Structures are given as C-alpha cells and as structure tokens.
Length: 436
Image 1 (spheres, helix red, strand yellow):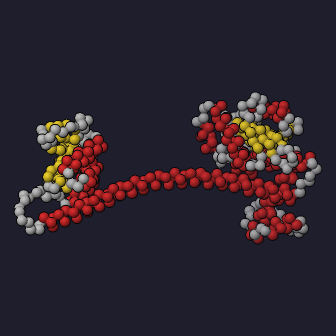
Image 2 (cartoon, helix red, strand yellow):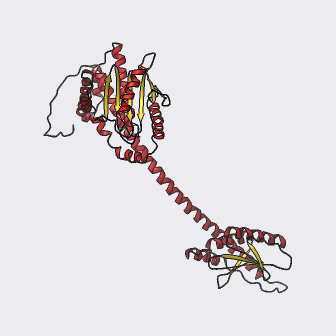
Image 3 (tube, helix red, strand yellow):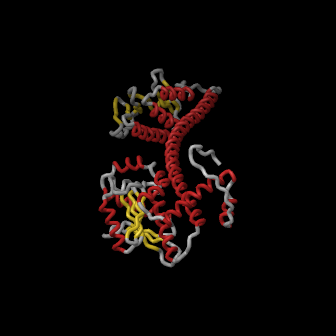
C-alpha cells in the first residue's frame, strides 16, 4: 500500500469477509493493490448508499460528483477557443445534435436514439433505454451548443417538455457553456415525478455526455427494479460503480490516443512526401548516368572500329565529347543552380533516345551529332535554352508558336521549356525518319 500522508486521519480496519462474491473478487486482486482497491470500493459504496438514502439536493450532488466533475475541467480552454469562432447558432446547434446522436448510438448499441429536433415542443433527441423488460423506457435528451450561458428559459422549456409528454427521465447537456443557475457541472433534479440530469461544459470528446447518459440509464434501471420490488445488493452496486469509473477513464485515454494518432499520421505523411521526392531525383540522376555509360561504351567500340585499317581514306569527322564529360557538365549546371539545368538534362535524354552524340564547345554550347554530322546546336541566353536546326534546301513547315526561320536556320524558342522540348523531339524524329 502506498505511503499515506501522516497529517490526514486514518482508520485501521480488520474485517472477515464471508460473502462468496466478495471473497472471489478479493482473491483476484494482487496483494500490493489490495488496500487501495478496497478503499476505492468503500468510497464508491459509501457514495451510492448515500445517493439511495439521501435527498438529491444541489449542494449534496456537488459533493458526490466532485471527483467526476473535476476531471471534466481540462478541455474547457480548447472548447472555448472553438466556440469563440462560432457565429451561426442554429447551424452549430444542429451539428451538436447530430454529434450527440452519433456518440450515444456508438456508446449504447443496445439502446435507440432518434433526432427529433425539427419537431415543435419536443426535446432534440428521443431515447429508449433497454432495462430488461419487454418495453424499453423512454427518455428525452436536449443538446445545447451555445457560445454563452444557456438561458433559464431553455431549462424551463425542457422541464415543461418532460411534463407535457409524460416522459419521466431527461438529460440536458450544454456542450460548450454553462447552464444558467447551475453552480456545479452536474446536477440531478427531481420534480413532480420526473428525474432530469443537467450537465454544463460537456465538451466535444463525448466523455461527459456518455458518462451523464450512463448515469441517467443507471437511475432508470434503479427505478425499474424498485418498481418491480427487485432489491439491489450493496456488493453489486459497488462493483457496478467500479466498472463505470474504469470505463470513464478508458474513454478519456482513448480520446487522448486518437489525438496523438492523428498528429503522428500527419507527420508521417509529410515525411513520406519528402522522401519520395528525393527518391525521384536520385532515380533521374541514376538513369542519366546509365545512359551516359552506354553511350561511352558505344563510343569506345566505334573508336576501336574506326582505328582498324581500311582500303580507302575518309575525311575525319568531329569527335563527340565523352559521355562522362557531358555528365560532369550537367552536374556543374545543377550545382550552380543554372536555370537551364533541367532543360539541358532533358535535351541529353532526347539525344540519347534518338542515338545522337553531343559535342561541347568551350563557350558551353552543345552540338547534336549523328554520324559526325550536325543535327542541331544550342543557343539562347544565360537563363533560356533555344535549339537551332539547319533549314536545308527542302521547304520546311514551322510552328509559329515556338519556332521562327532566321538566316537559313530554324530556331526553336525556349521561352516555354516544355513546349520547346516537345517540338525538338518532333524534329529529331523527323530528321531520323528522313535519314532512314
């Protein structure tokens, strides 16, 4: 048993337990938890016995439910911030009613809840609780989603609704604010044979709403059994209250876990997006290196064949730049954050796709070669890449959107890099087909 405060009063209790149910329950409790569990159960039993025997006055209820209501204070700051942004009370009220119906339906699968907020002179939700008899017991639930205190006239209207409909049990919940006249977060009221539970600041997590509904159902069950002359044993009451307290703690733990899980999922999504982007960049670089390696091997094979003795001499053709030098130039453009780096890389991929070699000039210009003959050359500015094709003697159609004819050449403008590269791909395909 944990050390107790020496300043607090204490009482040493030694009792022989003969009730079979209690004996079985006590034997299942670990020795180091036995004293604490017995004390907690005595507190719950004392509470329930006083609830049965004493009048449910406002001051007494405040004392009984203080341990529950104190735990309901923690979400007020977040809820006040949400409600401070709310402007349209009717829409918010409808949202609260649907929210409450969904939470109650999930928490009490054996009972039934119906939204009747559109009907005049009726509470927002009709509820039918299963108490073990053939017919379920009807109750009314009123949900308020006000940004300010719920006025007294709304509480009086709820009381009149219970009286006019003849329903004996009711629950009124204010999701975001205080119920006027209620000095405590929870109050139980009995008037003219009707029992009503009032809850202020219930919050959006559903914990207080479900706990209050469970309390109302317990009251209904008690009345039903009392009416049928069924006696409730003290041991059964203590065990039931212990289970309810554990369920309330579990609901709060689940609400916290959901919030943490949502935050973790969002962080993981951001991280995965960044990693996929990095993988795509690395894949693109690897693809370029592979293509250049193939070109380099092809060039070396061609050099070896060209060096073999031949019967006749042929004019020397301009040598293309080695693929590894082209790759180094692409890396240099990227590292220097050259605005044309992406366009040059795409141009290299087009050259490789169409079987063209690349020759780099000292001024950084590229020439695309096929079998040593010029197919196209680069031009433009420091921020824009153009491509120039020799016009030749045959008439050629141009696309005025991206091309212009100038001094025997056709210039494909790089103002729109995607459009330029698409047109270059078409011209390279045409030149390849013409050569074939």
